[in-house]
Structure formats: C-alpha cells, structure tokens
Length: 378
Ligand SMILES: [Zn+2]
Image 1 (cartoon, protein in one colour):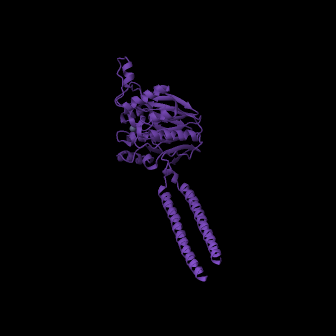
Image 2 (cartoon, rainbow, N blue to C red; image 1 turned 180 degrees about the vertical axis):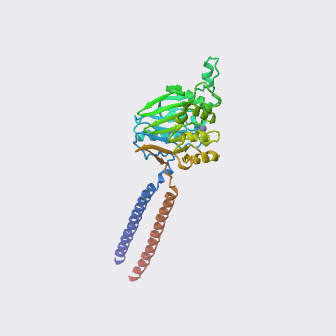
Image 3 (cartoon, helix red, strand yellow; image 1 turned 45 degrees about the horizontal axis):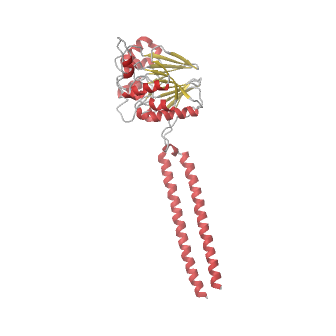
C-alpha cells in the first residue's frame, strides 16, 4: 500500500517536472523567437526576401526622381508636384519585373493609380525591354516613343522618305503591346514641352528625320523644377552632344546630369561636361561590365561633380528641399548581420533544448534510483 502511494506520488512529481520542462522550453523558444524577429527586422533581414526596394525616404514629397537600379540600362521614375508620374525607359527584358515592381510599389506608397507618361528614349533593349512587364502590370496613359517603325508598321507605310525600321523583336513586341493597350502615343521630338505642376519637361532632342544610329535618335530631356535643372541624356553620343552645344549652349547648364550611355567614352565630351557643369552626376551601370569608362569618370572628377553609380548605391532617389538637392540611396541589406543573429539564436534554442533534455534525463535516473530505494524500504 505504502509502495503504491509512493509510486503515485513519484509519478505525479515526474509529470509536474516534465510539464515544467515543456513550459520552460516553450517560454524560452517564444522569448528567443521574439528577440530574433525584432532583430531580424531591425537589421533589414526582410530585404533577403524582397530584392525590390523602393527608396522611400521621400515618400509623400511633391517632387521625386528615382534612378532605378537596372544594371546596365536606364529607368528613371519621376513624380511631379501635380501628382502625375513619368517613367523614362524601363531597363532590359530581364529587369522588367524589378522595374514594374518598383513602379507598382511606388504608386501604392504615393496612393496613385497609374503611370501618366512612359518615355522610351530609343529602341535599344536596355531601355525598352522592361516595358513589356510595365505595360502588363501598370496602367499607362501616354507613351512617347522613338520614330523607329516596327516591321509591321513599315509594311503598312508607303513613303519615299528614308525611314528607320526596328532591328529587334524586343522593340517590335513593346510597340505592338503599346498599341494593343490603347495608350496615347507621340513620337519623341525636339520641342515637345510640358508643364507638369510647375515642373517643366522639355525635349532637346531628337530632331525628327535625323538618323545615323539608334543612340543618335535618343531623346534628351531637360527637366526644370524651382531653380534646379536635370539633364537626362539617354544614350546620346558625342555627335548629338555637339549639336546640343551648338543649339543650346549655356542653357545646357544643369544641377544633375544623367550621364549618357552608361558612362561610355563615346559620350560625355569635356566640352559638354564643362557647359553642363553638374553638381551631381548619375551613372546607370552594372557591376559586371567595363563601363563606366575611366576617361569619363576622370572628366567628371575634373569638373568636381559628385559621381553616383547605381552599381554602388542601388537605386538612387533625389528631391529638392529648401532649394537644395537631397539624395537618398537604397538601404544596403545588412543580411550578413541578420543571418549571423539568426544562426546565433537558433544555436541558443538548440543549446537550451539539449541542456533541458540532459537535466530531464538526470532527473529521470534519480527517480528510478529513488524507486529502487523505496522498494528496498518495504
Ligand atoms: Zn543604354
């Protein structure tokens, strides 16, 4: 009888201990998991899962210019003070998803619904390829396109004039989709001028019916807001630069220059850079190419321009505040720190689990010993 009572007492104690162990382990797990979640988010661990990061430092600002990191290609998103938006180029086909995600995230953050203007500076794939994804995921009202005809369009045109015809399927696909979506379409042309909520957009190039290569028909845009000027040059080459210098001279002076053709040496002559004399120069480049050219970087250093590349900074956003240009860059994912913390916390949880398991085994052995001693008592 005494033995039976003892056994019930001991097994109750055992149950309480086991329940306590589970409780302690659960509490510790919850505790460490909570710390992990807080630290993971605090150190930007979330960026591990999302590779499209909108530079949102200027969220809600009237005027924002975003140079989206599309490797070697261009894609510039602008929000104007009247809440209209413009995307100049879309990166290449592989970057389309990133650009459309960036634009969609941006529009959502700004509580806007559509892209008012899409400008395709010239037909090269690294400028128009991503437009397929953009057009399929964002409502685009108006498109400015190069006067380069698709093969289908060329078949339908009867003209004696020399016309420029697309040489890539990518460009044909983009233009066909623009037509299919029913966007308003205009050809890029020198002289186009728009005032969007006090921000002036002016096409300085191309002159229609002037062709030698796809880069030489690149749209060049001067954007002026308050006292600041932005010169966006697409892939314009030195030949175009010389024409611009001849026609516009000192008017080309700007605070921000989107350096032409990803810093290629066939653009950005010393003559042009001295006239533009930008405080800030942005280069849309990839880490994996020979661009920007060292010569162009040297020429930019010679005029004391602050050089920012998308390859080093990721996407870059600019705004104007108190008559100054303010820069924000993509936050670098501190994923190494986040991962280290994760490994450390997981290790701790396992270590505690093993320790508790050992304690539990020792207690179980003690209980068996106690049982044996109690048996001898009788
Ligand atoms: Zn290009």
